[in-house]
Length: 366
Image (cartoon, rainbow, N blue to C red; front, side, top):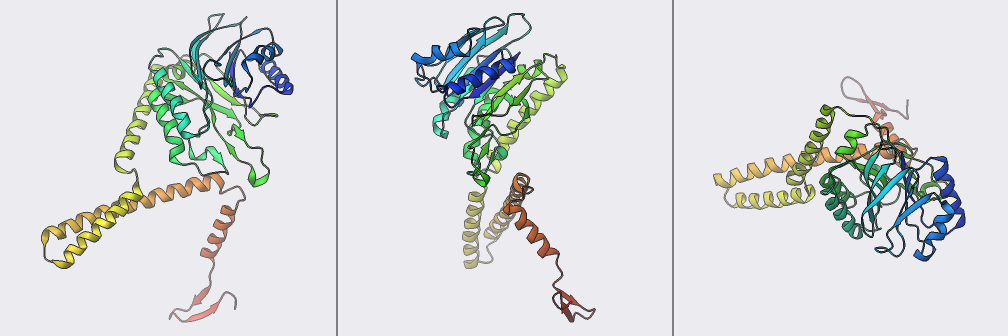
């Protein structure tokens, strides 16, 4: 059973219709979600007939006049039942007619801005509470999840990722294993103007991960499009109960770590500045009354707390520097050559001294 999603960025061009028809046939796709079709409802049946008479379709025109989400399936081999539609999601059940495969499937298309995507995150979270079987969510979320999910363009911020991350935690979902290209979209720019990002994804709940152990999502070449198609391949294989317990416990640990970070380490720069201000006020009081033991104790406690958070801040900066190096440090970039020059400067011997400390010469003289 191959399930696929693809953001077409418009399906009115006959060339694109030919490409999608060839893609479905050559990859043996049984269920496909076509996103951002930009096809008017009155023209949808005409385009669907060109794709093939063996396909049936569900669309969300009632919620989105632009036809943002279409789900098609080969009715000879698959049964699909609609559960719910919104502007950015279609939820349904998918079952092979041979009885070997069944799942709840959600095809999603995220809107462009952080604020307009918030209803989608709520929809996914709310729907997750109604699912009692394996559940697969695929599509173009239009949002990155990790700092490494974008090359060039704007730096990934926490504001971009936190809603997606929180949604996955609340819905009890984790990303599927993937192969092929890491990035799913590019602006097709040339040289350093090319921006690439991973905004198309496949995630699933614990029941899916426990049932379809070998499920893999293949990020295929985009062809004439700017998005890559995602092809989900599954191999049914029972997973041991112990592995499911480990997966569940790791999800709990992740949530605990997030809560710890929010409680103790969120807004670190602001907290450090606040501690600096507090320490300054205390030391001003101490200057007026140097022998006040209570103020002395307050100074000691505030100073120790400030040192603690300064060490934490330094550690955080070191980790961010490593992330930046992992992203672009080995790509013959400006960062790489700057780091190389800095290393050479540190390792160079500019001045030599004898045993008495007297300057002997410079490297230029040698």
